[in-house]
Image (cartoon, rainbow, N blue to C red; front, side):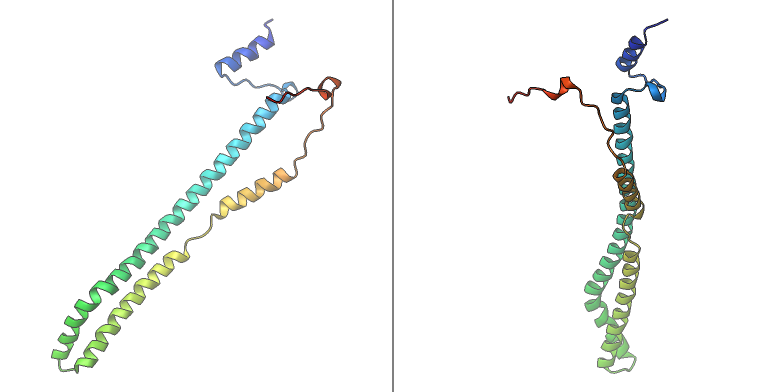
Length: 164
């Protein structure tokens, strides 16, 4: 029969995972397992939050791009095209003031449509609901965890500490 301590030491040295029965696990193994699982849980929650935020950022960028395009169209095309359109309408026989009013109203309607598109995109941006719910669930579970009482041994009561 082989030495079980040597088997565990070889597994630690080589990085091999060995499964022990629930009653055979030491406190160190239990703490290491709990730490690894907690770390994995935190990493998974962070990955979920990143994925949700990335999706909302894409929506925000699309809404921002539509709003920027609306502003650029309003700013740069209004002076040039409004003069050309107003004089074109004036050549059809309408008064010059009415021609400019019609052209200005048309550009405002176009800008309002693009601003409405931008607003619709911005309304789709939401907080990372799955991540928040998962974090709240984890916090609720961790609040119910109570530390395991340990026996105090006489040898550990008088530990001398040096201040270096």
